[in-house]
Image (cartoon, rainbow over all chains, first blue to last red; front, side, top):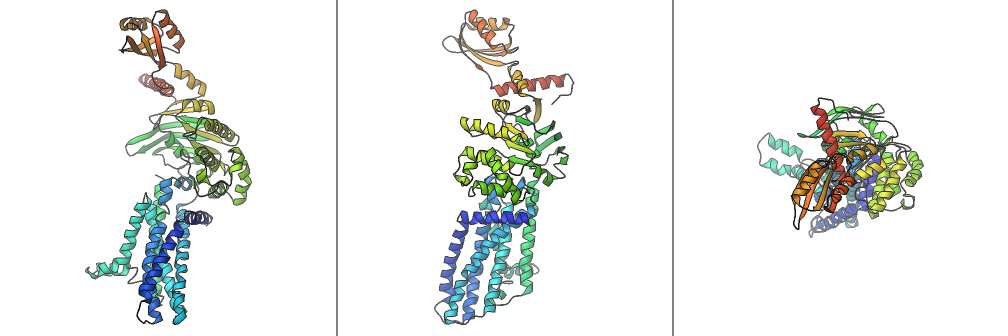
Length: 241
Length: 320
């Protein structure tokens, strides 16, 4: 655990010293704010619950995209700058390194997700919002951030450069997000598989409506576990070559 | 004590290191000398627990690098040619972090920090941000990071590369300071640097250890069978005759140049440079220039590899 916290502590510092973390958070907040105003609030009368559901719909996509940008540098940057030697020459286990990197990314992603709270809070002014709806929606967003960040960590562990890591990560996240569209044009049993793997259509809509299904929680946590385990295996294989 | 037995490392089909066997007692300062691509960094990376040997075995104080890599990494401080530093951190903050990464407690690292900063002459700079430091100071921070956890073996890969002459002198002092507490291994392709810093030299050529000895022995070898380039004024046939008859010369290759000048690449039977020049001047030739036909390091390599070939022809086992 000590190794994980050491890596996470330094990496968190790197996010905010390089302004990368601030830049991504600022960009997401601006875009999310515009989308909230234009589409979630809109010009027509809506129930508050529908406004919140639309807010989570747009926030889902932005959270997934932000995770890709936030994680692409995690391991690939260390490899590019040569600082990976510090880790390779230390008695720290690959899973500790990957765990620390992931935790630092998740702290930043959690800050990002929670900093959007002012938007649903505005609905309180003229509407009626269920706290349970908000808790469920934000739980969903945090789980999406967790899964996408884990995929990004895996991509960064595999790739030699940040750009390649970003492309791999975006492709994988894109596959999981848009899988439901592919499911519509494929035959059984592939359509069932694509449909089940869909981050949004199958596993997020419930959160957006204020429901927490244990099946969806387990799905996202499974993605996190498998991705981080694979990332650790890649790091271990690369360390001793 | 470091014991390497038959270390071999392949990159694909290319053998970067072949059958290297050596023993290094505690507290020694040993230089790995060789041209670029000779295999120096490969040996050091294997010793640092960064590379797995394709064959052979290495132990440090009985700890096997292959089976107990984490235990080995605790005993090693490794500085690659480009210091692995996080530019956004301050020196003291970075060293504290590295010390803990190497398995020491925060209290242990904080206790060791003043001495390490002093050893590397960084005390006055400990609050500086690393990215703002000059190359020489970054190298010092690199050395400090390699010793912050009090390792038994410090491995420095090309520690003086990219430094200016003043920084080289300072770095030499820093490196010598390290030997009080640890065995120090250094790699370099600069013969004079290794001679000045190390007690013992292991020379690597094309992945093989071709010499193991003290710097004096190395200096002696570099004058045996020396290749000189002479630029003379005189008749080519007469120069050819004079060199052929000289007992100081084992072989000479001549080329004619413009304005009656002759260039001769001469292989000597020993270090007879002054005698040969005197002989040629006495014979009436004008000496325009005398220089090494190949670099000093190449001279030593040529001598070492020639000896090895001869030993092999004689069917004897080569001592490395």
